[in-house]
Image (cartoon, rainbow, N blue to C red; front, side):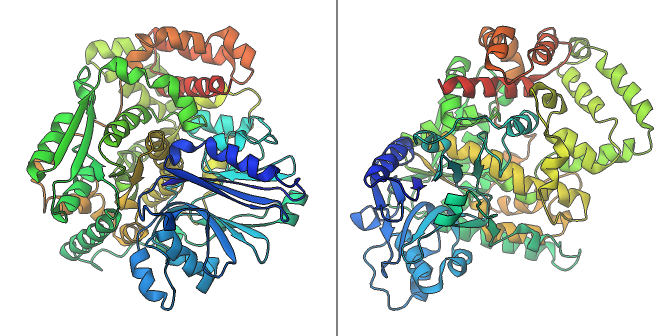
Length: 633
């Protein structure tokens, strides 16, 4: 795992580019603390920078930037190619220098060209490839979006890198907030690709490549990224009966087992996150089944909040599998201490609150290993989210209710404060209000959009033009089936822009490489080939994955209500975080910053403090934007 950076600035004075990429690479040293390097082509106005976290081939033959055997290509590459050993057999005649996956990738590009080589790569990657013959830069990103890659045009230069802080360190970078991206963030809790929080700066979408020449940079007319792989080619579910239950479970077992085995390759210590839930337990079970030594597993728990602490469940699974298990119990104060670092860590407004425990478990794992596998991606690939079942149920009940009547019903429920509902049964208030918000919906798509994001967040950004439909309309070739559409949209947006971002930044902040076996593209393609009944059956989510897990772990250890990997934010915002939130959301602070509507924010904050409504999500969005904004100072 590494940090990559670069600058394409035709006409830049000789010597300047080397200094610039050195500074850019220093900004992401946490992604690669082991070594660094650079490549400069002053005549072309091009330079690459690199920071290395050595994982495979720890010798100098694995260093980057790396030049291909032909001498034509130079690359910096963040990620891992899991099938590099098998690809060596396809590349007969190459005089290998070492054992790195980077060298194999370069030999493949030498032989077949970048467009033909990319689909042959199995793995996670962000690639910046310089063609010395054609003076052409190619940026590419893995199919599922595990590894990040940003690029932008600033002052006549193309800047790119693994994180935005690398681009910001360049003297030509213009720090102008994109207000449409801000409004999108306040709705979704993340900035959706291809936008970034900065104007003239973008995320390269997952599964795409972008070719750039000097003329493109000089004229400021970059082309559109081109997809080399798309999940849409695999959205036609097999008819019921086309594959039997037993065959489906066996095939999934074999695919996941192979994915896990490939991702266990490393020349450094390796382990896994283990929450005790279905997905992480499946990954760890398959790791231990293929390991001659106890797998090292890691869990973080907050004992002060038993309802969100799954560490005891994880310990039970670990004991059954025989792993070398490590549990860190942290106090609520320890968890809250992470909050001031989030703006710098994520480098862009990001408000998935599970970012906090994710960072804590990554920090624990880094004390023992350099690489950690995780169960992320299982929910998106195999129908794990409650919304896939809730949205159709709500739509069936609200479809024939006139919108006026639905709005009146919603108002009557919301008119009763959260604290009053909670007096009937603890936790009832927030649930009743959330369900009431869905009442005006007339179809599954409308329910999903309301569940997915916060409509109240849209009113917080000053001068915004963003509306939720524009975010959904960016996703092409969506399936006809409503549940498939939800899963498809999650796979193309929520997964790369929330889940993968959360894990990557939380782990790389402590120089830990993470790998996600559920996001092997072969597993994803297989999941999308299955009938829905093998994903969601009888109200049970991830049915096929559960059948695989049951081969290794007794169901009694894993079949329980999902607690989630979170923190009690609603409680903290009214208690120990109140002073901090008061300061961040004060009218004076918001007016001075000039991005959020102080009146709208104040209204939500007052209602939350008075327990009239639970506005945790949208307030956390606002707080994370303010935290990020102030981290720039």
